[in-house]
Image 1 (tube, rainbow, N blue to C red):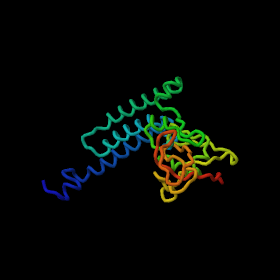
Image 2: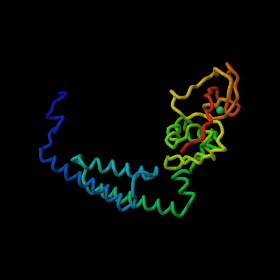
Image 3: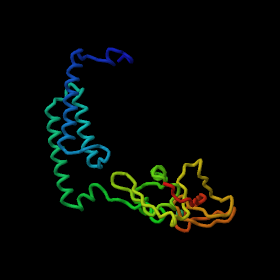
Image 4: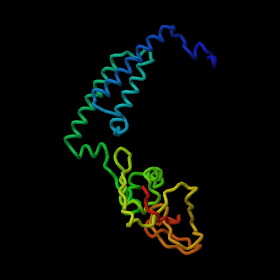
Length: 230
Ligand SMILES: [Zn+2]
């Protein structure tokens, strides 16, 4: 085999007219996926559930293969199409008739922040780190956890936040990026600090090195106490 043999790289043994067949196959693949989205009743892809993602990926992979593999005939793709559509409809039917089935398939909303503190059990059970939410929180105008009464991770991956009234805001863990948030094992000055793992607040003395009373974390960041402006 010769590397960088451009005849092989570009077209190999296919006749030039095969490109026209590929164009026709691509139209077929496009129509299949388009029809599927139309018939299945989906309006957009922003809120695709895990199950829907699997269906779309399977169909997309089948449609991708048929678009340029000369030895993949078109009719089997129609069979894939009909099977997936039937499965999809059946599952939707099951989900609308059984809350348990829907919960099992789609997952349930998970409480991740309660009264300004991370719910470590939820984070550990779902294998997520508290840092993963910092961006999400900042984008919703949160500067520190003390502003958040309740944070819920929805089944579509969005985070819903409910805030304390401005008068009820308490000091909390900063969610700012590292350059705006110093993290210490041994704190430089006395003051109120927040555990960077769970958000728990503890007054610490200068040079003190201690464990969080709530989660045994050892890293601290100065607690912020501003209320939200928006
Ligand atoms: Zn902690």
